[in-house]
Amino acid sequence: MPIRVADQIIHKAAWLYYTHGLRQDEVAQRLEISRASVAMYLRRAREMGIVTITTSSELFSDDVLARELEDATGLTTAWIVREDRKAMDPAAEMPVVAASVFLELINKGERIGVAWGRTVYHIADVMPFADLRGVTVVQLCGNLGAPYSYRPDQCTTEIARRLNAEGINFYAPLVLSSERLADELRDEPVIREQLAAISDCQLALYSVGGIEEDSHLVKCGALSAQDMHDMGEKGAAGVIAGQLIDHDGHLLDCTHNRRCISADLDSIRAIKKRMLVVQEDNKFGPLIAALKGGFASHLVITTSMARRVVEHWSREGLGKAGSRRG
Image (tube, rainbow, N blue to C red; front, side):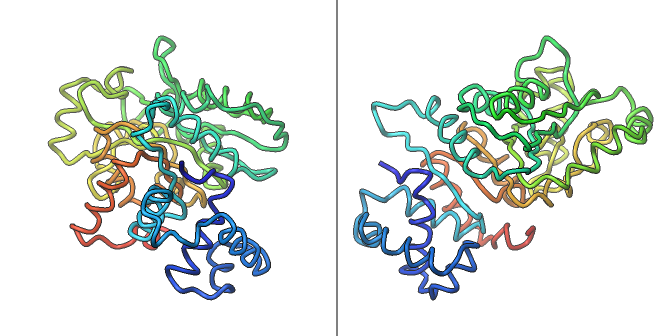
């Protein structure tokens, strides 16, 4: 069974100290904790048996894989949900793990940016209730039509309700009918202020969308299936907060993005804790694009997806995305 979310820092301290050979003060600096805490965590690691991670291939296999994924890509932390446990359905376990991780990352008084989609909606649906008054949950992108499920305002409002936090919704459409209208709306003082404040967030929660013909952008009517196909031909690889990114994680130069009311991608990358949750196997391409673009510092994925990412990163000789994007 993987190490609990609350114990993962113990595993990370042991990994850095015993596997990477860092001194205790270097581990403290890397994890942003005190040296005394490092010493305590290393003692706990010995008591829990974590220091045997180099020889215990079964007990800590997923946690070692998580550390290897962090080493390869530059992620701050990765959490892995196993797919081979008969008692647990990964589709049901993923939102529970993600909700637990999300709560662990929140500090008092922080601003949190939330995007949209089925994954985020399911995380909100299973999130435990907490009393985090003083925390503010803000919507990262414009809204969708009422009939569509998993809307941005629904995700933001429900997470704020579960946290007993203040929720700030974005009262603007996700996609406008023309670039001129989108430009004018972005210049409205209220909208301009909301967009500018996104970079003040300390934590963001989102997933990365795909570019299939039945993707969320198609289902909500923002793009037609043919439009999405054409965007793929022009280099689109994924969707972040309603905006199309290319295979390197850059904003795609296209009419859709220019008509989109959403957080500037540089503003999202400026958020220190960028929590990305990816469950579906068909999200591998979008996930790689998001990692290349620096859209994740904290990642929750399945075991099989983690292995694919590590293998891909090694095969392609990619550097650490986190070190490039901050």
